[in-house]
Length: 541
Ligand SMILES: [Zn+2]
Ligand SMILES: [Zn+2]
Image 1 (cartoon, rainbow, N blue to C red):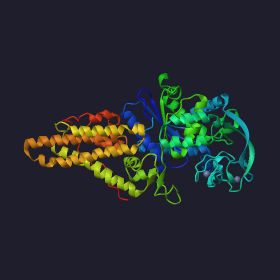
Image 2 (image 1 turned 135 degrees about the vertical axis):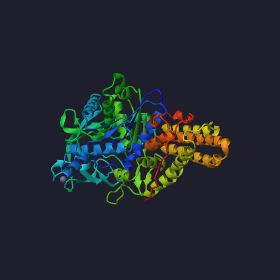
Image 3 (image 1 turned 30 degrees about the horizontal axis):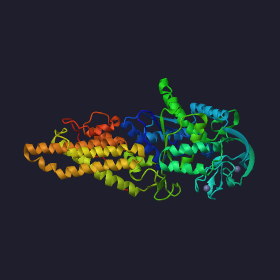
């Protein structure tokens, strides 16, 4: 999808559920979203980038009960944890909120009231899992059993091990109570339902035009065309956003979680002028809205969320970008099998930029990414050390030793042509969401720089009198130009490391705010180079 340059852009990244530590699987969404935002800014777009912690729902309550603490305490702990991880990885949100904020309670209440007013919510007696031993209802994760569609072991609200379907309360077969382990029963209880099925025609035409990745659009269309069932949007529990007028019910976590995108926009723009009001992003389609998510939450973002927005007359998302899931050594995550890579531990051993690079270089965005230490060390050693690190260190060292400054000379036409091609390829990432192409094309340019330097043999020229020195300077300047261009594109992927390269080149501007156009601007002769330091260390696993 072509993003119109004249409209402001709102980019969101799926909300991490703050119930445990950040692992590598989470980053498959956040890092590419951050790269995307950096690229948009390099191309001159006006962008805001938001996310926040998803704080409600039963897993947090269960985990609080197990630890003998309050849900607030669980949330506060992991909210801080995620914030620190994002900072360490330079995933630079303009605002990172949480869904238990006062404004999110307020905005959720306002939207639910409007849905009721507009006739999209109805009351119904429905069967819910109930534990006779514990004497209580068992919403969502309080119950486990079998999926009614595929027979796999499932949680109360989703078939997470099998077909991936969202399960409505009361649907699960052979329910067991998660608290006491006993077989559970079903009991009638009054709940509120969102009339999702009445949005079927709207959704089919909306999804048909939805931008983003094909996987999101196709899954959602397939589901919508089969049959949409109404959503039970209330839960009988304490923790969450109260359903309007009912003290005994809260709204289902998937109601207030995406509304967080609106509240966070509002919180970010709260203290600025009216013109910068949140309505600019969420009313009247005056902005472009892009959601970055994982494939596991397509249903929620492409069906439930747009239907809810449509029901209250808010702006609809323009694009949904869904990343493939992460596997570890070919298997799914499992703490007991050691199949989990915690980001905090990773960052104690390796530079964050190497992880950012790996996550996009290793596989196409919508495909599954199979993490292994072997593939990580190969990417770092064979690409970052051998191609990029080698180019920068070798050329800047040679230039520093022999000239101290960027020498005089013209940039060759074929060098400019190679840079122009790279720039074209890099800009495509914004319409195609293919982050691997961005790194591949920058690394191809780095490769070209290495061969250019090797072919011209400037180390011979420098010994051949004034004429030799002059030609040598020109070659060096050309390769420095290539490094400068590589650095601008790769800043989106490796912001800290490219900051180091920028400073070695003696550039005075801030590499993080330089526009892509600058790739074609000749590096200034006479500017002082810095004594180079090695960029990347070899990884030995
Ligand atoms: Zn299933
Ligand atoms: Zn029980």
